[in-house]
Length: 419
Image (cartoon, rainbow, N blue to C red; front, side):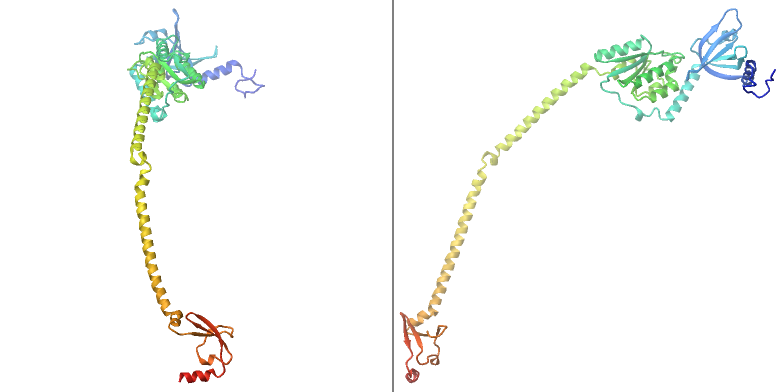
């Protein structure tokens, strides 16, 4: 027979008992430990010396079998029931005969209210440090949600309140009702599952998590870290409607909106159609009044403009300035006429001076102008030397002119006459 201490292989496999003993040996080395959890099952059989319990992790879907002496449960100062939070002390035990693991405990202590509140405060501080309570993360609620997702226990008062109040406020509201336990060890995973389903539905515009009031132990699921992180990761706005006004689970801080009661949640999520219609009617009345006032005001402005002289008689401005234009035209004409008269007098004076100095006046006094006509350029004779014998000349007097020819010896005769 092959020894178990030899190397394990396909040719040298270990028997079941060997692996069972090895697992038991490793588990037993863990020693006695303290474990916290939530009791989900208590089975005490009469006439037996062993009680069987199931201890579940509140934040994960994991559980562990626990065994103990029934007297241990009876000696507990606080009666133990399913859903109670406890701390147990025991040693892990692997039963090689059945290949099962259980925790054999020798002490069990219920977790008190003070300890629960202290743990809630620790979770609150942790999530606050991560910014999960930051108001800037809060998403606004839609004005008219297409569908409202509601997570609550089946046929609960909270469910009825939300549906009844919302329907009374708006008859067309639609609900996607999701039933889930709201206390006990199965509450957190069930709520998270329904939360993911509603968040993935594009028709759901807002999610309401509702439950009636209860003790601190009853409301523990709504301060569970796993549930709080799931709510923070939702893309859809979440409304917390847990308990009554004094109840403040941590879900109120993580949710986008905190409602004091389920009824308050319905009022926050669904608008009151009657109030909205009244508001619309009031806005229409105010807008109509504002429009009428604006029209009247503009009419008064138009009337004021029309009553002004410039618009009442548009030609008046032209008429008022016509006199000025006419006066200006008269002044211009008077100035031009005066200028013309002055210039006419000046011209007449100059003409008289020119006539006095001109050759016609000289001729009128008995003088004559002699001009040669047998040369290319007609010019007046200025000297006797310009009158050779036979030169043709024109003699111009006051009343006309006559042609002549210079006779011989005229120069001598002229000189003599001059002497």
